Image 1 (cartoon, helix red, strand yellow):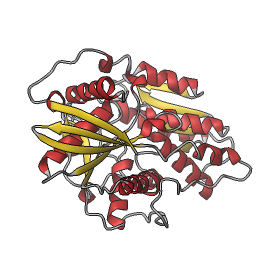
Image 2 (tube, one colour; image 1 turned 30 degrees about the vertical axis):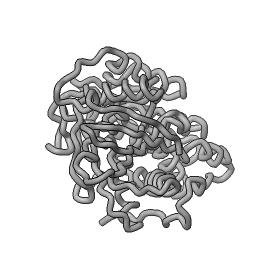
Image 3 (cartoon, one colour; image 1 turned 90 degrees about the horizontal axis):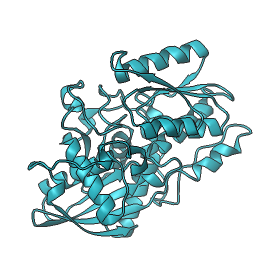
Amino acid sequence: MIDSPPSLPSTRSPSARHAPRSPAGCDRLSALSGLVGDTPLLAIQAKLDRRRFTIYAKAEFYNLTGSIKDRMALGVIAAAYGRGALVAGQEIVEATSGNAGIALAAVGRALGHPVTIFMPDWMSAERRALLRSHGAEIRLVSAEEGGFLGSIARAEQHAAQVGGFLSQQFANPDNWRAHYAGTAPELLAQMEAVGATPDAFVAGVGTGGTVMGVARHFRDVGLAASVHPVEPAESPTLSTGHKVGRHRIQGVSDEFIPEIVKLDELSAVIGVCDGDAILMAQRLAVELGLGVGISSGANMVAALKIAMTLPGTPAVATVFADNSARYLSTDLAREERVRDCYVAPRVELVDLRVI
């Protein structure tokens, strides 16, 4: 049974954002909502194997802390205030690979909450530094201590001990509702403004909030576009049900299938090699000036893979989840080996428009 989504907007306009209501005496939440959402849409013209495509990507690095997770953090916190699950001064606790924790720390600390983040110790140094800069307390968990699953267990234990609010991004329906009410209608309105409609949508799965919110919004407005989850080819968690290998696309394929992900509501899973994702992110930066993260490179590769399976000149949409600044100590800033099976080396990035 699917949780009831919020009411559909009366108009599909990027300016008609569903701003969360402030808790009593907290105008700051409403102020922060003005810095989340209504992100630009990038129309990227690309050629692959003699075919020309337009890939439409939401530039989510324009959000408050520079990632799509700001939508989730704001939506989850606002909803928790609304039902009384989060009260003034209460500690916010979460297990995260980085971006969600950064977003929760920024919003939570701005609203006067202590924030404690549990995360695997192999996440980038930039992510840790950003968490600390927003005032979060970080608890690192090694692979021997359970990695991501260990981080979740420790977060749950800590929240119970201190009476904290556990945001539960992997299971909380307010996560996908933020994308249902924000990301999806913004995307459709922006594409509609240039006479386009998505034939497909792709996005990497960390929590699954983006793909589930977009898929359910598309369904409810009667749009037949397919919605595809994206995962690393080196660790096909969605395809196998468990983590089977290591990969370099931080923020996706976190060892398990999140509770909010319902694969029967989605189209085929797309696997992308992490090296291909890195090469594509590097090319987007050098050739189009788009300094995006590795998962954004993966989304671009996945969008082109799906476009190649569709007839004519399909329009495929995706998200560029964050920027490159939080990956400068990773392989994104190093020379990557090219393999024959990669898509990125065969692509010609022709043009860029901003909608």
